[in-house]
Length: 253
Image 1 (cartoon, rainbow, N blue to C red):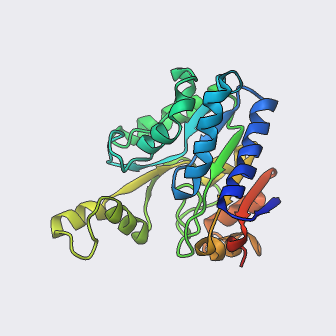
Image 2 (cartoon, helix red, strand yellow):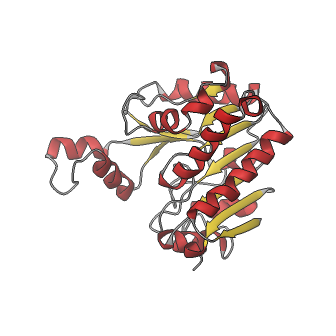
């Protein structure tokens, strides 16, 4: 594992971008797996800006969305699909549609999984996967919930951590404690679809980024000992053959 400790998030994003750009230059038609969240927003702005400026470098890249919430339309601002299209719009403008795999949360999950694996096989595997890490109550990668995911898990529909569901409430502007009973029941049924741990370990290279003191405990749980899926599903990355972790000083516990 290669560990990079940056001064702050901005510097960390630059370091992470350099890892990605190096991969693209090495293999212009790289298949890249993209996670979505607050952690990746600055990084994706750098990618989009560079893609606009240097289209010839990025035009053969292939994009793969690694997870999504089930039951939420891709047109919803609360879907990862929507966020990817927003944050990477300049990249998406220059790459061919057939080189893009995005997940539609209202599509039949079985069909989505079948198409996802077909896309990965057709492109001979994921060359680089970009990951964040969940908070200390669930230091997960993608939607592989801690204590609910195994090393050998594959792409599947998963039940989300209760606090992850609460976060979904907040993003919809509905306080979990005060929502109508009918609405609360609907949100409890929210599921996710995600690449499994085995799929992530099979990616040729993995890049995990984490910033801020709120992620310090997650990083410690995942990387300070042995693989422990009950404490941190992200600890499975200790088994990855080519892992780069980029954090800032505040994420060092």
